[in-house]
Length: 257
Image (cartoon, rainbow, N blue to C red; front, side):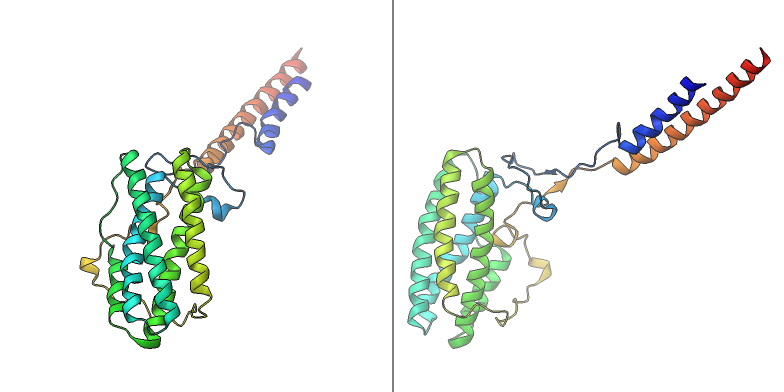
């Protein structure tokens, strides 16, 4: 009887301690051969997953397709001399980064986009139709937002890529982008009062590939912990019932003797 009771307690103890149950998987799965990066402790950060070298280079190219024409445009349309200088420097530096992104893509046999996405084209069209203070406010906030997004992607690539050249380039991108973000911040025009996003025709809107969605879509690994917990619970209950019946039978057998 003592042995039987001990056996009865084993599955209950295992269930209480979580032994043998499936652990929930929170590791993200990213397409495109992502370079594995250390998973941060914070759950919100962990959902972003690693950034592939391809996604990083696409983000740089897509940002260039917005920042270069916008910077050249600012040299012509901005009334403020400071913004004209910012536009010129931004266009020049992004051309340099774009050239290096293209060279890395060639080495890694990757294909980069060659035109602005629908969202970016909408921004460029909007800026083209503005002037004066409205133009300056929109320019600063649109470019500040785009640079902030590629800055985050570069940080992920710097932390997670296995490629020495990609890591070095990611560090350069962060340094250059941070400098231009600081210049835009110093204008005092970064605010939530910028003109609203331009309205786009949903039928012609193409998926955004650049800064708007520069972090690749991550598909979480399906977790079966809930289902397994239910199965294990029923299994434990059935084992306990069987062992309880066995115990009763043993007691009756002992009494009969």
